[in-house]
Length: 366
Image (cartoon, rainbow, N blue to C red):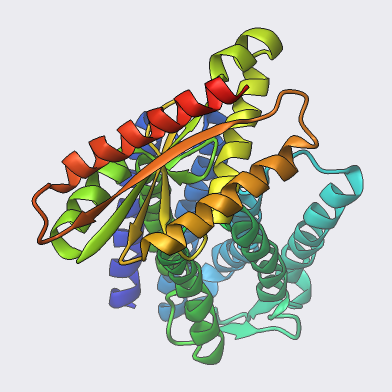
C-alpha cells in the first residue's frame, strides 16, 4: 500500500509540473493544449481515486463501504476518458456525427455500467465488510480503454509518418509503458501501477511534443534550421564525407503576391514533399529558411545525389500538373571530406553558390 501511495503521489507531482509547463508553453496550439490539460487533470483525479481505494481496501471496514463503492464507480467510469482525450488531441480534422458517436458511445456505456455496479456488482463489488471483489464485467473498462488506445495508435502513426524513425521509436515507447502496466495490473491484482505509469507517460509525451516543436518545421514536418545547425556540426565531426545540397523554391514572393499566402504555404509544402520523396534513404532534409531547404547526405556518393536531383526534377514536373502556378526548384551541392582543406560551413557556402548559379540558368532559360 505504501509503495502505491508513494508512486501515485510522485505521479500527481509530475503532472502538476507538466500542467504548469503546458500553460506557459502550448502543446501544438491552444485548443490541443486544453485537451492535453483535461487529460492531465483527469489522470490526477484517477490517481487520487486509486489512492483512496487502495487505502480503503487495506483498511476494510463496514463503515467504509459507501465511499469505497463511490470511488470505484468513479474510477472505472473515468478510466477510458484519458485515452479518448489523447485521441482527440491527435485528430487533425472535424469528424462526422457518426464518427463522434463511435467515439463517445463506448465511454457512456462503460460509465453507466460502472455507476450501476455500485448496486449490481457487475464490474466490482465491495461487500458488507468492506472487502473489494472483481465483478463479472471487470474487463469492460480495460476493453473500452483498449478500443481508444488502438484508435490513438492509428492516429499517431498517421500524424507522425513524416517524422524520422528514431523519433517514432520514442513515441511507441511512451505509448507502450501504460499498456504494459495495464496488462500487469490485470494479471496481478496486488500490483497497482496503471495511473502512475500514465502520469509518467503524459509527462514524457509533453517533453516529446516540445522536442518536436524545437526540431521540426510544423508546416512541412521536416527538420528546421536549429536541427540543421546541430546536424551540420555533428556530421562535420563524425563523417568521412557529407554531400551538402541546397535547394531553393523560386518565385515564392510572386506566388504569395498573386495567389495569397495560403497558396505560398501550399507551394512550400509541395516543395518539401518532393524533396522528401526524392532523397528518401539518401539524405536528411531540412527547411533552413522561408523558401530554402538543405539536404545532408552522409557517406553517399555524388552519383547518388545526381540521381536524386534528377528524380527531384521529375517529381516537381509531376506535381506541377495539378498546380495553377508551377513550383520551380533551383539547387546546387558541394562535397565535404573530413580530411579536406575546407570545413563543412565553407562547403555549405559552395553549395549555396552552386544553387544560385543554377537559379540564374533557370531564369535565362525561361
